[in-house]
Amino acid sequence: MDNKTPDSLKNIFKAIDIAYNSNLFKNAKNDLTNWVNQGVLLLNTSLTFEKKEDKKQQAKRQLAHAKIWKSFTKEIIEKILSSKNKIAMFLWGNDAHNLVYKSIKDKEFQKTNHSRTPQIIPSANIMLLMASHPSPLYVNRGGDFLEVTPNHFLECDKFLAENKINWISL
Image (cartoon, rainbow, N blue to C red; front, side, top):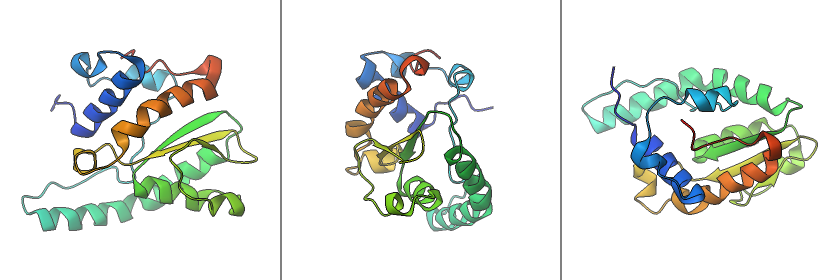
């Protein structure tokens, strides 16, 4: 098993370090069990991929895998959106933004701009926090992940209040 921290997770840890003035990035382990125990679900639009040497082949396979997982991921999103619980959803990347927005029942809210400021879905107790994907591909090419997301963690804390997540505890 590969225990190397994925680059996207490294950027998530960096955003947490910025928000909480912590050293999670330097000291982080890949075991996110404590987040899971606090109710955190990390969900990607594609849950598997096939590694190919050829970059074009890789991109094509990733699209194919995304199609395989689309209905499953959409079902999970719809369950979350129908929950009566207070939930904060971090939507990182256009695929996440689009998938969630298309699943929101409130058609007027669905038309709103994909704002980088926290939004609460009317008639739901769900906060949406949107930024670019944490992948180095986006972060290093002008994506706003490390600029926007640290504040999103703090906004999430305020929104969840006494049920906030202890992000720096791994």
